[in-house]
Image 1: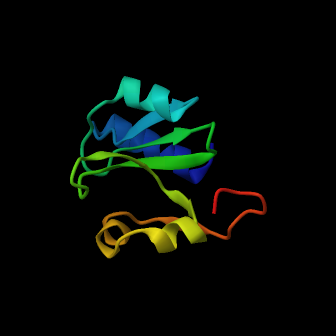
Image 2 (image 1 turned 45 degrees about the vertical axis):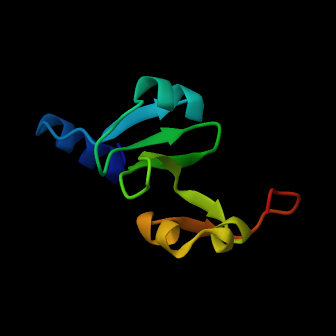
Length: 96
C-alpha cells in the first residue's frame, strides 16, 4: 500500500472522508456527488487526474486540477486563485 492510500484509509477510519473515490468520467462523478464539501476530491480515470470540489466559484462545482498552460492563462485571476491547479505544459495537438 502506498503512502497516499494509507493516509486516505486512516482519514476514513477517523470519520474524515474527503476522498470520494474513483470514477470513470466527470459525468459519473457529478452524478454520484452533485454537491460536495470544501476539500472533497476524487479521481477521474477518463482525464487521468484528480478533481476537487471548488466552493470558491460563483457556482460551486467539480474542477479538474490538471490544466494545460494555455487554458490556465485564459482564466480570470479569481478563477486562478480559487483552485490549486497543477499546470502542465501544453500537449501537442491538445486543446490549448
